[in-house]
Image (cartoon, rainbow, N blue to C red; front, top):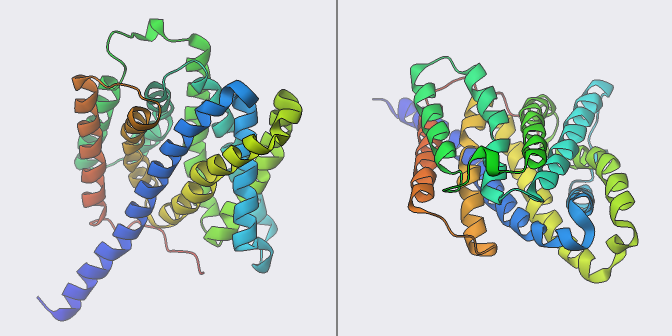
Length: 301
């Protein structure tokens, strides 16, 4: 084996490692932020919490990236607008579902969207092995003794709506990934703010201006929007759509763990087994992704 071959292998591994680690970091931050955000529901509702999350995240990212410094075509702006509107709808629908559904269950239902996308884009037998592990884990993650009939149907409907938006978010985020990552994320969140803020203000009113709640909202905005969406954009620009979708199977597991740590929720042995299955799916997908040559070319910095 030549030195050039060895260097090529190392470069391929490094180019895959960065987006995979970025996506894992994004999911961890998002799950912790979502667990904390749920505590704000009694004060400002799911709508107001969504407004905090998106608007504060947008302010932070616009200040950091100053997206006006980069050129932007009309076509690229339209793609970013689609990405942003989908982002707002996904967050709002998911938080509405969290009002009546446990965190792990809501994430599991929402994951139907990216999982369906992963199935639609899969072609190799190994892909279906990881998808099968993810599906098995998601089924086991439903709380013991709680059937679908025991869950709030309105909450399920909101979670399913969020699932559709999540799949569209992956597609539109990939389209917007040809733009500078910081510009796409900051402008996307700005577009999302134009949707979420009026809805949140109409529901919560002046409660959104409470200084204590604003501080809590800043924490939610950083953990749930600014940090994870920046990291996700790195992953979206460098991973195939189906790889991104299956890797997201780790998020329900992380959500369940965040529920244990932040919300004091208890998990059964079956649910811990589910977490192991989902992590196997994510790890397997990450390992086989290094052999693929379909990753998109990164946008210029």
